[in-house]
Amino acid sequence: MNAEYKEILFLDIETVALVESHEKLDERLKVQWARKASFLKRTEEQTDADLFNTRAGIYAEFGKIVSIAIGMFTENEQGELVLKTKYFTSHNEAELLKEFIQLLEKLGPDTKLCAHNGKEFDFPYLSRRILINGITLPQVLDLSGKKPWEIAHLDTLELWKFGDYKHYTSLDLLAAIFNIPTSKGVMDGSQVNEVYYKEQDLKKISTYCVGDVIAVAQLYLRMKGKPLISPNNIKHAE
Image (cartoon, rainbow, N blue to C red; front, side, top):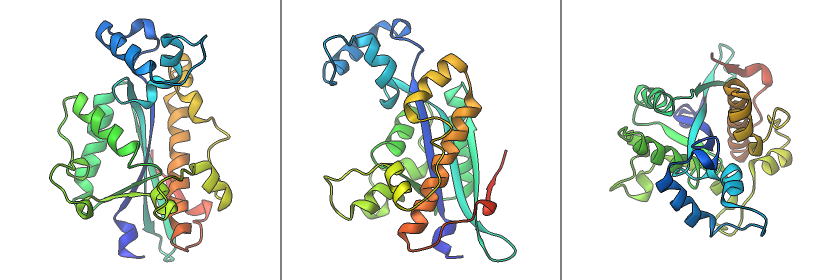
């Protein structure tokens, strides 16, 4: 196996609003959400509370992480490429983040992170929530003082742009183009907040999250001109 592939940690995060409803938001944060909401597109009927329920989870200041799924390539005895996946999930965000950071430290400094739109969403969101929880940033997420070429972040969206910074392409669309199976039958991103607060179903959310990690890893292979990994060679660790 190409040594480059061994060093890549594919990841995806699932996020929800910080609290179940706008009414439960801290008073200081309510004031700040009102300011944020004033810049968001909405119809005249939509209130700050409506927008909080549907949009808060995408902002690290008003949301939290409930699941982190990861995947790494390895080889089996036959020399075939294998993708091993795992997820971290908890109602306690600090515990979830500490577990994830322990993994990063175990993997070592050569690890590269890869996500779809990771540079705009997953990596900064993770970093902000780590700091908000009073935890020290792991080396791979600490960008302070680093030159651009020293930052070990890969982004399949950026790879697909080929320098076209106006262009956004969703993971779903690229998966369809490259005929990559996805987890979209389980649920979709717009349902995560409701599934979390109404059903408290962390396993359902995490299963969906793992599906996206698999799609990102498969997409990375296709963008390198490699074939997809067989479903039989995708292994999930509990």
